[in-house]
Length: 167
Image (tube, rainbow, N blue to C red; front, top):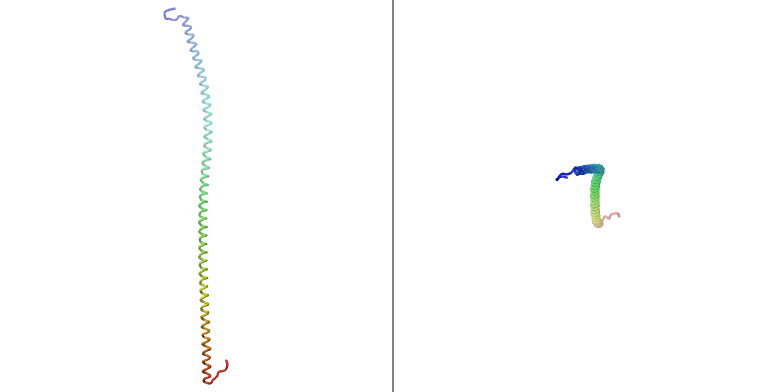
C-alpha cells in the first residue's frame, strides 16, 4: 500500500460502496418518487372529491338561497297583505264608529226634537185650554149681556105697553 493512495482492492470496495450507495439512493429516490406520485394521486382524488363535495354544497346552498329568497318574498307579500288587511280593518272600524256616532247624533237630534215638540204641544194645549176658557167666559158674558139686553127690551116694551109674545 502506498503513501496515501488507496489500493486497488480498496478502490474497488470504495467504488462498490459508492455504486451500492448510488443504486440504493436511486432505489430510495424511486421509492420516494413512487410514494410521492401515489400521495399526489390520492391528494388529487381527495381534491376532486372535495371539489365535488364543494360543488354539491354550493348547489345545495344555491337551492337554499333560492328557497330563502322565495320565502322572504312570500313573507313580504304576507306582511303587505296583513298591513293592508289591518288598514282595511281600521278604515272599517273608523267608518263603523263614524256611522254609530252619526246614528247617535241623529238619535239625540230626534230626541231633542221630540222633547221640543212635546213641549210645544203642551204649551199649545195650555194655550188652547186658556183660549177655550177665555171663549167660554166671553160666551157666558155675551149670553149674560144678551139676556140682560132682552130683559131691558122686555122692560121697555112693558113700559110702552106692547108686551111681546112669548118666545
